[in-house]
Length: 239
Image 1: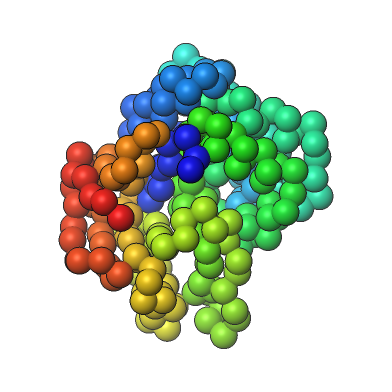
Image 2 (image 1 turned 60 degrees about the horizontal axis):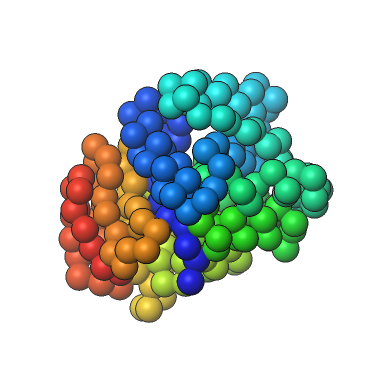
């Protein structure tokens, strides 16, 4: 079993509203012997503009300054970048490894089977906290549904959450997408627990704990695969 904490975040990576959550995840990693810094991995935004990549870099830098924590922005935007062993070596000893938002399919396809992903998994297994926000949270599951291209097969995810699938931005998502896409998102195998996570909200499994806790201003929605529930800040659930 991995030793590190795991955070599934609906939105808001590196924003002031999420600073206390991110600091707590860093502290969890430090308790496990990791270096007090966090790693930004912006791969999900790898097909976006240079300005957007710079935006993510600056957002993380500012959060690190608020927290008084070292930040390492790894410009891993493609499968080729993720083959870089020197970049991979920067990951595993860090207290927090953060997969930020964008396209979950590009994220999964770019990192799977690479030295960078091996380093992410090694870090988490040995005590680093691992956070996935929006696309990052979706990619941690076994499969990522193609809700934008509903006739296309799901993308293979990282398979770190074998029985959980996340819908991020849950309080806003269905305002953005057509009904056909919503049906794809809301469909999951019977053995899968489907969870909606609101913006500025996370579902966190702490290192050494068996249950999960809601952190943030919104709700976590248990949609299928387990008894339906809407869970607010500090609520706990076993999945």
